[in-house]
Length: 69
Image (cartoon, rainbow, N blue to C red; front, top):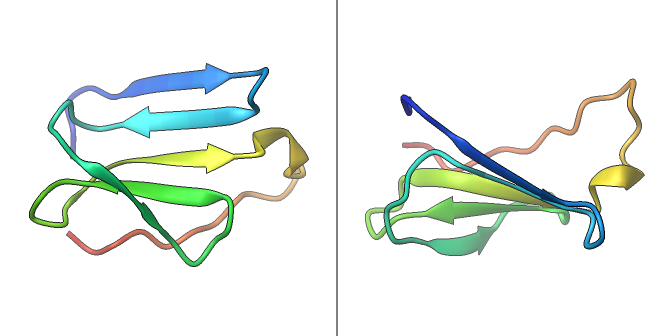
């Protein structure tokens, strides 16, 4: 697990991004329409993003599977 994370939230775009690493990577779809995972060249998850954050209910967590390490 990362020692430090970086979190960005853009209220206007309703977008949340969390990164576990500053390593180069690319966005990859998940089974959840609102969630993208960020992976490095070896396929390790180095972050994720959530689109449309405000549409999710506060009393129910958003669940999505990310690629195994």
